[in-house]
Image 1 (cartoon, one colour):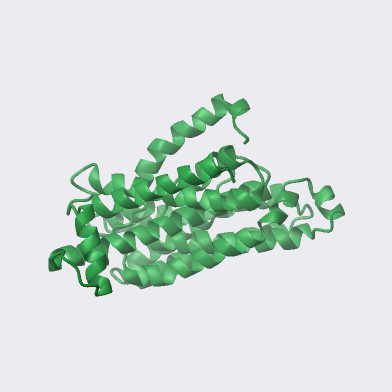
Image 2: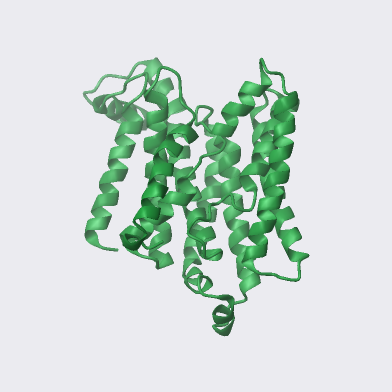
Length: 336
């Protein structure tokens, strides 16, 4: 990776962390951030002890939110790179096999049945997200044609089924309580971030992302047609299942924690590819870092632009849709 790219990414990460830590309804300046860390480390200094209210906001609300945003944004972006490589499709997104539709259905069902039990909602969303991809894979395996295109079509079918189920649940949901919760969850938000979610979600996403990074070099071969990959000694269907399984775990755990985050897994891989090229050993970590930075910035905007918090998918869609149009109009200048 070129030195100037490293410097750029480092500066972007520092800026995103600074804004996320300091900006919000409860403003915390750089001096206060230093106070909070010194106080937590038990280091003596000339700075005063921060107020208890500031400590609560910083440690229990803002910091877990930042960790979730950084890790989830990175994980979804890495999954996007993998799916675009596997299906040799620049418009492939991490939800192409129905994981988001399944997770949304599971969350809506849990909201109606389990009401306020956050862990139950998260577990249901995760389970149904995994189930959706499993159903798509089983459906594709029943076909005589085992190509990636059939798997994509199977994902579209399963996604439509779960979307129909979600529509039914929204139709019968209590409009004064359950419906608004379902809609807000579907649009995605980090407002429920907590250390318990960090403990559950971050290890899954980090381990999955590192695993994909370690085996990223094989994706260079998987982007070729299947005959060439087989001639190079790659068991295509086996490795495709491996990559899909790890990526699905990342996306399902991410969506289960914070809801749907649109466009991140689609546009960030293109930006990373433009910066470092298509070689996946370099592309995966850069996409992960860019995705984390992007989600941090979008979440900061979502919680500060208006008096009430905006669902993050609204912000990412405002940025993502025009960017996709730009890619279409300027395809010659970008490695899609």
